[in-house]
Each structure stands twice: as structure tokens, then as C-alpha cells.
Length: 380
Image 1 (cartoon, rainbow, N blue to C red):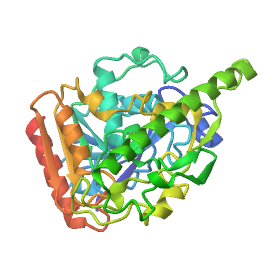
Image 2: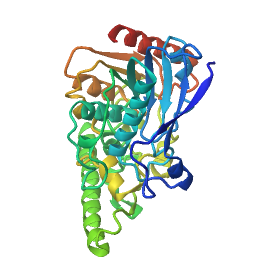
Image 3: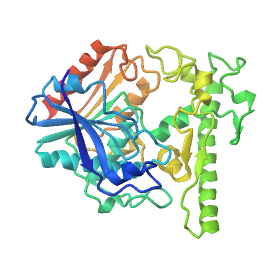
Image 4: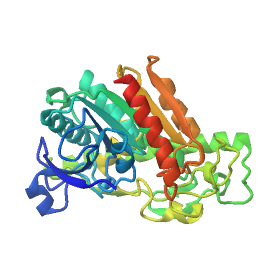
């Protein structure tokens, strides 16, 4: 195992109290990264940077395997480390820019961004804005103006066990049986995937109605959020710009119980365990957020994090790597990302039997590393 260095990268725009709970973290004003070098004491030509909007990747499982193949492997965090409740994707773009600029300044010839899981849509957003910045704020105001930011482009992108984007994923996971946003037990039995009268297996017509109802719920929440923001501005004269938001029942994807939908090698269940339990527990995606964070991360209407849409103008090489036993990011997700790339300098690689983070699968980590670094050597 290689020696891990801790890197501190100054945040380009300081985090404020409404973004980062910890006063110590705000005072430090840095992004934390870990690095494993291919050759201790000197830089490799290529830095491979793995990232996620909020997960703590400092101990990422693939760093040693990548470094063993001749690149310097870096895991970065954003200002929202371990807490995505008030996360704005647009601020995450600035944080990626700080890390890429820092690595360029150290002397790396090439930088490859690896969007792991929720990082897939984020690296697509970053690269698009680095080439052609158009976003002047987060949805409905607030957040940074990316057209005025320094966003050095990456040289290649990798989507590793990635979904198309946080809003794209949540709209497939939201429980449409919830009728009252303040009461997760007020349910429409006809739209309840956990009601055995509906399945599994799920009838195709029922599933189509379920998918429409999921999107409708996402839209209703967005309408509610926009109305609350308008009321908040009216009541406080703009002095308060955000409020907490709880979204109940956020892990109800029929693919978790009916394996004939989007077929793969996966086992029944979710990353958080049994589906009915995962649907209600607070640690599932999007459950605890804020009004503005909902619009930036989770709203299918307003979020800037739609990976396929952002990849449509990307001109650097793109590699989509997915696990065939992943319970969260499915083969159709990988295909959406791959098909969105407008050029032919792209690759789509399955890791047979691979689970979401290749947990307990060290032999598959080596296979993934061979594919990722071997491709990088060819395209750079």
C-alpha cells in the first residue's frame, strides 16, 4: 500500500456559515485531498482525481491500485464534506476548479477527473462550464457566477459506477405513494411498490404510471420550494435566504425488488439494506436538505447536474465504467452517459460482478484499475 499524503488546497471562494456548519472548517478555508504517488518524492505526468459532491473519499479504495499503474492518484473533497444538506452543485464546481488549478500549478501535465457515483454528473457539469461557462447563479438566485470564475478544463473524464445526476437518480427513487409531504404514512395504495397487490413483478402499465407519478412528485416539491422561497423573501425582506426541507420516502425504485427491470447481475435490495427500511431512513439520498439545495441538487426541473445533458458538448475523452452487480447505478445509467458523448473518443466498460464501490472485491478493483489507467494511457 502506498503512502498517503494529505493535501490542503485553498478554497477559491470562502465558505460561509450557511454552507459549512463547522466554524473551524470555515476558518481553515481549505479543501482536503489525499494523494498516493506512483513514485514517492516526485510527480507523475498524470494526476487522476476522484471526486463526489459530498462523500469523504480521502480513503478511497482505488488510490493504491491507480498509483501502482503509474499515475498520481488524488481523492478530493468539496466544502460539503460529509454533509450535503445545503449543497449547491455550482459551489462544487468552484471547488473542483481550485483542486485542478492547484495540481496544474504543482506541475502535472495532465489531469483526469473521475466522477464516482454522484460525481459523474458533477464532472460533466464541471467540464462543460470550464469550456463554455453559462451559469450565472444557482437556480432561483444565490450561488456563484461561473462565467466569472477560473475553471481550468480537465484532459479526460471518467464516469465510475456513476448515475446520470442527483436529480435524475432521485426522480427514479422518490416514493410516489406519498400523498402528504409532511406525513410519509399517508399513502396511495395504488402507487405503493411495497403493497404486494402491485408486485413484484410489476406490470408494465403500472410501472409506467409509477414512473410518471415519481416525476410528478418531484415537480410538486419544486413548486412548493419556489413558493416558500418567495414567501421567505417577502417575510424577511431578503435577510434570510434559505430554510430546511425534509423529503420523506426517497428510496423506492422498483428495480430494487424486481430484478427483471433494467436486468443485471445485482442482488435484490439497496445500498442501505432492505428496500422498505431504506425508503424511510434519514441516510438515504435527498432526505434532509434545504430549499435552495433542493433546487440545485434534487429538482429534475432546475438542477444543473444532468450528466447526459452536460456531456452533450464535451470534447475531451470520456470513459464510462460500470459494475454489472451495482444496486444503485444501473446498466441503463451507464448507457445514458456513454450515448450522450457527442464524439467517438469514448469507451464503455463493464466490470463483471462489480458492486457499487467494489466493496469486498479487491480482485475487481485491479480489473477496474487496469481498464481505467490503460485507457488513460491510450488517450492522453
